[in-house]
Length: 153
Image (cartoon, rainbow, N blue to C red; front, side, top):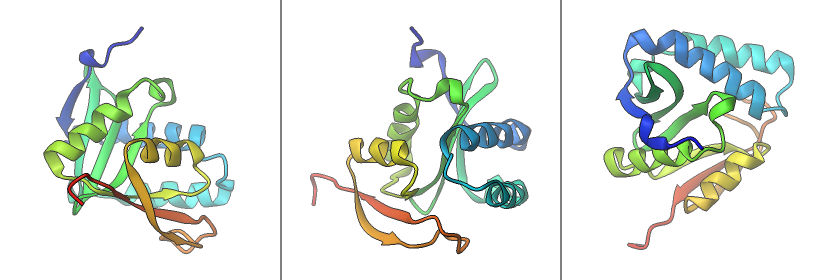
């Protein structure tokens, strides 16, 4: 049984870049089976151009190894990715709880075909307020724009 206590949340620095790019790729290959290979390669090229310092990025680490990461822009979760061996272990919850409490995150866009991610965010209290036919790159991957429903209204 793995405990989430052995993981630390640390602010992204450029020394984490190679690791998070690897985590991103492994995660997408494991969870985004709806992507066609050409689109995957295009998205990978795009992600490789990101300056992760432009986002609020935090890495979940165990012994300096990045298990997963979350990235936000203006209170919206733009990225949440884990190495496949860490998926389903409660670590996504650990990072999202941090994002809610420390960064005031309240929005996320999810690929509609990524059913596990949709279920995950619904379980956290997100509700869909808009659906797009295409993703932000204009590809045929519908997005669900979701907002955190709070008890405060």
